[in-house]
Image 1 (cartoon, rainbow, N blue to C red):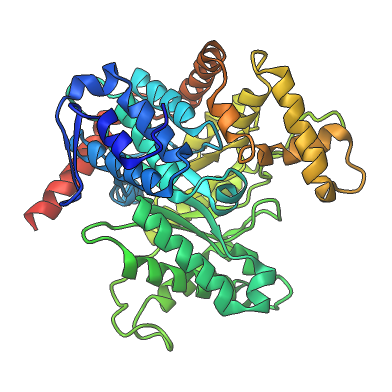
Image 2: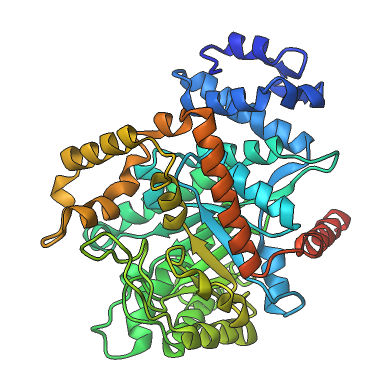
Length: 473
C-alpha cells in the first residue's frame, strides 16, 4: 500500500499510530499491530514512492519517531572506534554495506543475519555518487534502514543504535579547480542533508586533490588535508547536540597506487595542524576539534572490481602488509580505529578472514550484493534485458574504447537502480524471498569472516556506557 494523501496516511495507521498534526507529534499506540497490519511496509513504501512530497515527508517523520519509541535511532560509531583505537576492543572488522536497492528488503536481510549471529556492529552507507544513480536521497535511505530495523525487531528490546554513513562525500577535482567555492559548498549542502537525515557517520574524500607532481609528500597531500580539515570543522559545527560524528579521511584514491606510511603521517599531521587554533587561517575556537576516527587507504582494489572481456572479475593482488602497517600507525600514533578497505565485495571469499587479522577497522562492501541480486537465477530475465536495453540507450557514451558488451554491462549496470527502483521493489513475493534468503546467507558468511559474530553485547555495552556518561554529564 502507498498512501497518496496525508489524511489517507492518518486513516491507514489509525489505532496503531497517533499523528497529531498541530503539535507534530507521533505516538505508537499498538506495537503488535505495527507488524500484524504491515504498517511499517506501508509507511516505507509511501516514504519512497508516494507521488506527494508532503506525504513522503510525513511518512519519513513517522518512521523516525516510531523508531525512537521502539529503541531504533541513528547513532555515531565514534565511541566504539575510539575504543578500538585504544585497543580496548578489537579482533574484528566493521562491515559497511552500500545497499543500492532494493534497500529496505536488503537491509532487512542484513539485520536478520546480524541477529542470527548476535553480530555487531554493522554500518549502512551510501556514497555521494550512489545517491545520484540509485535515486536515493539521504532521508530516503535513512528511512529504509530505520524501517528495516523496526520491521525485524525481536521481542521487547529494540534494535538499538543504527549506524548510517555517508560514504565518499567526495570533492571532484576538476570542479574544485574550476570553482573551489561552488564544489565545497556542494559538499557542505550534502553534509547538511545527511545530518538532518541521521547520517551520523561521514567519510570525507578529498584524496582526489592529491597532487603527486609536487616534490614532497607533504606538498602532495597539502590540498587533501587542508580541504579535509575544512570539512571536518564544518561537520563539527553542524553536528546535533550531544552527537560526536564519526568522520573518516582518505589518503589514496581507490584504484590508484597503493598508500604508504609516508603519505599517512603528513596527512594526519596536516589535519591536526589545521584543526588547532594556532594554525594560520584556522578557527579561533578549533583547539578541541576532534579529527578522523579512521583512514581510508588504497591497497590494490578497484570499486566494483575489474571485469575481463567475458565480464568476469579479474584477480587482484591485495597488499595486506600495507593494510596492516597503516592500521597499526593509525591506532598507535593517532588513536584512530585503523585503516579502511574499499572496493572489497568482489574479492574471493577466502580473503575476508584476513582483514580482522591485520587490524582493518572497516571494510566497504557494495557491488557483490548488487551482483548477487541481478545475477540471481530467480531474477526475471525479461526485466534484466530491459535494464540492459536502458543502459545501451541512455549510457552508450560512457562505454570505454575496447570494452566488450559484457564489460559495458557490468561496469554500468549500477545505474539501473534509479530508473528501475519500483520494479526492484515490486518483484514477485516468491522471487524476492529467495533472493533475500541468499543475500542473508552472504551477509552471514561475511559477518563470520570479519569477526563480528557474537560481538553484539560487547559493542552494546561500550555504546551504552558512553551514553550513560553523556547523560550524567
